[in-house]
Image (cartoon, rainbow, N blue to C red):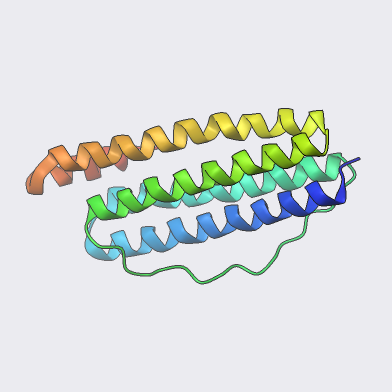
Length: 160
Ligand code: MG
């Protein structure tokens, strides 16, 4: 059985994952409007992945006798600047999410909940990949220059 304190903390993270999904979807719509359909498609897949994270956390809590509750999702920005600025914001957002996940591990540890610590380490590892992927795209965009941006756009459009 999961403690109430940890349950509340994970529900907070579920809301944060849903907000991330909302943020990336907003970025996707923005990029589509700007004419970067590959990046828009990449961001839409990223948005779906964040919703999947929320569902994974919800089903874990239910297995542990807890309850998943969806809170209010705050509004997200609608203007994001150049492609490089967009992915810089993706990178910075993922760094903030990594911090939140680290704090959740601390809560699970304080509650002496080994199963939840084990579950959350999976997300700690996931964040290493998320940060590396986002910063890799920022680097690609820095090197690409004006014309090369369309090559990056078509490469990102290949994401499954
Ligand atoms: Mg996530």
